[in-house]
Image 1 (cartoon, rainbow, N blue to C red):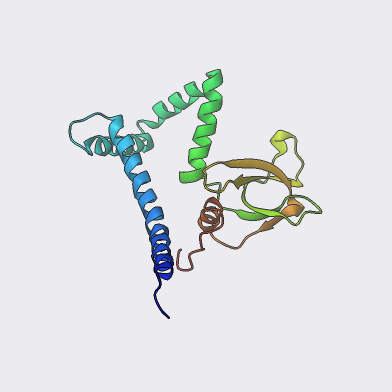
Image 2: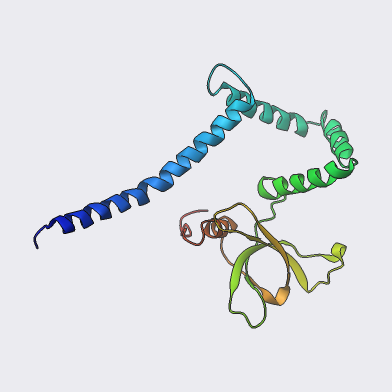
Length: 194
């Protein structure tokens, strides 16, 4: 097989695209981490690069430690109570607090992955997470549950109230399901992760 200029061009183009496939995800990840760290470092202005980030992380850690001591728990409860009384801030604060608690707190909510049939007569299903079983506070009967359906390539999603009969629990790690959904279905489930 002779190497014609056209064949050499195709081979070079193939190597170029393979290089893109290898470098673009890594470059974007490093760029996103760099931008996030630069943003966080810039929140506290200092002349030494990285010192603002170090002060920020240290300050958050100290506040977390103080908030867990018996001495400061009444102050935290008082501040929480105060924020719960201000009309607009009450809604915003409550939602953000619940979201942060659901992701990183002790009450993790995205830990029950399910497959959701979008309706009878449809063969289309979506991956999601049951966030609440009891919706009686909304006036919804026990035959429905709250399911969060995340979007691909985005940290957003929709909350749907789904009939229980349309839910299929999945026997897999919630983190793997979230990674699969957010990646648009291109990520593989890690076999060795636990």
